[in-house]
Image (cartoon, one colour):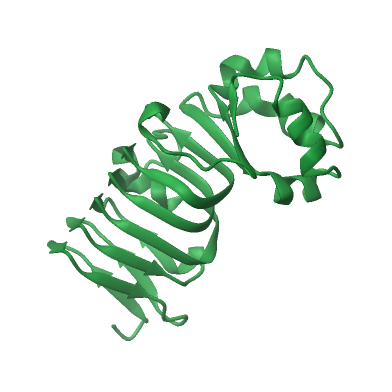
Amino acid sequence: MDWLGNVIFENREIENERLELTDKKANYILGPNLTLKNCTLVLKVSARRLSLKQPRFIDCTFEVKQELKNYQSWLAAFLKGCRFKGALSGDFGHWPEYSSLPWYQHGFIEDCDFSEARLDGCRFHGCDPATLRLPRWPCFTFLDPIARAPELRGVKWPGIFGDVIVDNLHTDPPSTRTLTYHAPSVAKRMETTDEELRAVIEKFDCIIY
């Protein structure tokens, strides 16, 4: 760790190791020129203390012990065959318009498993959702939300979910392939219940739950 509190992993390849990124006072910077294979990363820091600069994660496991809220840095990572556990919100994959910084132009996600994660407000960009294992109920996922937005707007949603979420699906970035929420969490924010949400969700084949 340098005097600024930075812990930097760059210019190397790491295999079969367990990395615990848990120091609350540290700023962890992963990349550039970093490849991790078959590693376990334990993350227990806030989103602002974890920066990704085009690292490559292959067959890695992420154990998220502290929720990474609205975390955008995954957009600067290459993720292949990885597993995620814990609470996450934010964006994954390739969203080229997000930032002009060079590492954000190389985002990638494929063959990743989120079945043990709690996703709430997670978008997946520029990828094939069929290669991803997304969490099931109480999480639910809109597939191709921009194209299906007119259909989804055609029914009455409970609380303010329709006004706030569904009516604005068409404004998501063009690269958006899926959008996942955690029903109990989003229901609380949208003045409804997860049971009322599910009653409407069940009507659509473009929502997996």
